[in-house]
Amino acid sequence: MSRPTGQTRNALAHRRRAVAALIVLLAIAIAVVVFGSLLKTARIAHRAGTDEAAQAQAEWLIESAIERAARKLADDPGYRGETWNLSAKQLGLPEKGLVVITVETSDDQSNERAVHIRADYPNHPHDRYRRSRQLTIAIPANTGEE
Image (cartoon, rainbow, N blue to C red; front, side):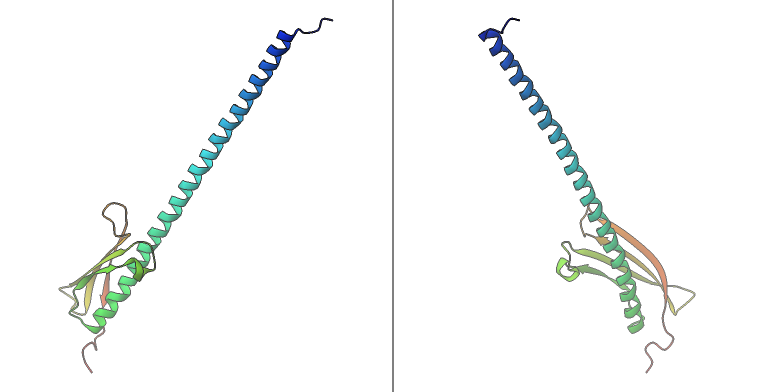
């Protein structure tokens, strides 16, 4: 059996180091890909949660506007609606909201009002969730009499 010479041993050691370096680089590359994938998944999940919360807030604004319109119509049958700007502070949220309430008198029923409601959250021209609802609200017959 022949023993490796000094040059052969150096070449062998160099190859081992090169292979070890390649293995380490490959492991780092795999770790970077996995970490990037996890970050992307987390970002998508966060955005989905944020979107869901904004949609829910728009729905809650619609419900609040329905109650507001019914209360205002009970107090004043001449109420025609309003634009309701809600600050982020009023909402207790990071963004402001907008609700537009429009009230129309129906020709055949003087004690009923057609109410159209549009809610935007957040109130941003491009990045918003918009919900709309149309309903009829009956005004109590004894309104204005006391």
